[in-house]
Image 1 (cartoon, one colour):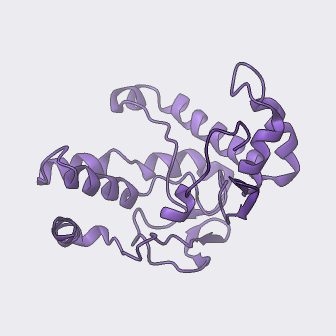
Image 2 (image 1 turned 135 degrees about the vertical axis):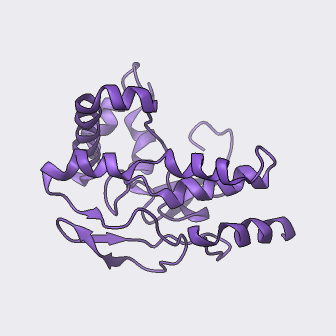
Length: 210
């Protein structure tokens, strides 16, 4: 809208609330050969995400991203994304809750249920067949065990489970965790569907009918 070239129709935060977005990944062999480096990387990510989440740092964050080495765009253009107050176009503004959520609500935790939901969409679109082997590959590429091991020395709140029923939390909800208190959700899909990672066959079959 700032350039007069288009308008925002919707955003990911309204399609699947508190859903995953960017990813940092490593090959299994590298992770096994460099456990200390991987743990240090995850802790650095944790500290950086916490800093980015703090509203007091938004101005500095926008100034950093405005540099040519990063986005190379004016700070004013970035602030709506950092505050969740989006300019949709035509002078219309909308506030989107949890639009920018780099740290809170276990934003960086590698939920296996996220991996499995993405797997169901790959099956749905014909990118791969639904087999026990492919299911295991998708599930095992997310490693909450490595994430917990890296962050345990920090004493931060971490989910006690490796997966959860996606779309079930309608409001922010306190949950069991290792460390400090933890709040998750809401995590609803725009169509109200629920994804239970323990009922993948039924979920995939239901999508074929849709």
